[in-house]
Length: 115
Image 1 (cartoon, one colour):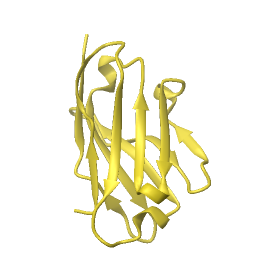
Image 2 (cartoon, helix red, strand yellow):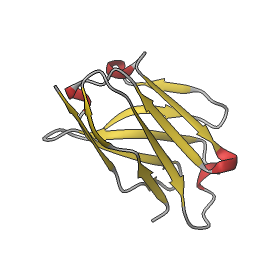
Image 3 (cartoon, helix red, strand yellow):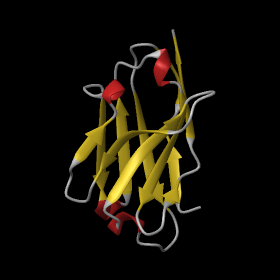
């Protein structure tokens, strides 16, 4: 496993969670330009939630704009997703990924938002 996602859990609607993605192994994953967080809700396809480049350019799914913040610290080989004002629609398994010539995926962390 090269990327590990953590920080998921059960939270009430309106609450917050911070997901983290860290690297193991020797691959230079955090030298890759494009990294992001994806999620897969029950019965739905995996979708991009937020992405970030090495220079800090970010992009967010419309549904999370203004509520989620993605960040990365390449020196610490860590990428975070701060999620505020969570709703039950944010429930799903969240995956971190680095995508390029080769893709690296974390194992996923479950976020459950109760109403």
